[in-house]
Amino acid sequence: MENHKSVINADECFEKLPTIQYHMDEPQSNPSSVPLYFLAELASKHVTVVLSGEGADEIFGGYEWYRPTPAMAKYEKIPFALRRAASNVAKALPQNRITGFLVKGGQTVEETFIGEAKVWDENDALKVLKDDFKKGPSVRSITQKVYDKVKNKDDVTKKQYLDLKLWLPGDILLKADKMSCAHSIELRVPFLDKVVMGMASHIPTPLRVNQENTKYALRTAAKEVLPEEWANRPKVGFPVPIRYWLREEKYYHLVKEMFTSDIAKEFFNTDELVKFLDDHYHNRHNYARYIWTVYVFLVWYKKFFIELESDAPSHKAKQPDELVTV
Image (cartoon, rainbow, N blue to C red):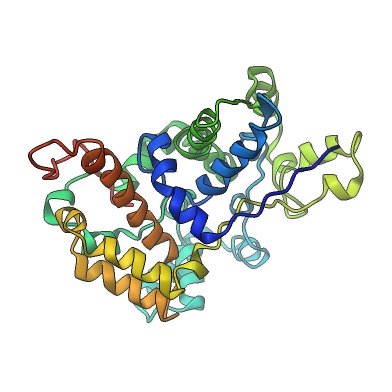
């Protein structure tokens, strides 16, 4: 097997972000879009078709959030009615790790699991959005329509189904397709073959996710053809160190300039935005995903509605049909 390595720095990522958002067509704030763009660029120098593993986590149960922590697994053995009562009491107490555990432990999966796509707490989102953009549907109203189709399934299956319907097509596959197309290569996803998906749908839940491992059935099958160390290897994502970049003075000022721009003022209460940015910069809280999500939206909007329509008489924001507070 021949490997190729490329190291990308923060300057390159910020410089290419407008181009990445141009190819995405819509604002895509998953930070992994950035390295995926550069990976596709590197691959295009050697091949025209690539195979990718998108879909395996969703259909075989690969995400850690599909299974409870050992502590939560033990707590869930207590009757739900008692946990619900404890949750209601904990909500009225000062919030900390213990009360948060009790609150979550007494809620249904429909109440606690929205999926990886959720970034903004809705109360925080309402602080930064201008009034005209607070009228969209809530995240809960969107996810509930999906959950209603799997009412009688177990919690793991419900989580997988939600990700299959929202996270996979709206994020994972979207960015994989757009970033590969940006460099004229074809990306194929063999795990999403109809036969494979049909087979995966019949795997009992304990053989998908259990306290021993995630993707249990897939890993067990992989041991037949791969070294056990590879088959049991922990899942590794495609992380981007935006948390640390946004605490560097150079990128803090770059983002702050965008957050205080006329474009930002059309959509957001910029004073509130800057508060989140400052709290993150001074290491008081980790608001990296909050900041990145808004920054990406503004970069996208500037690219499509300012730079590509520079001859337009005005770039006054129009009320979208729907704006989800994420």
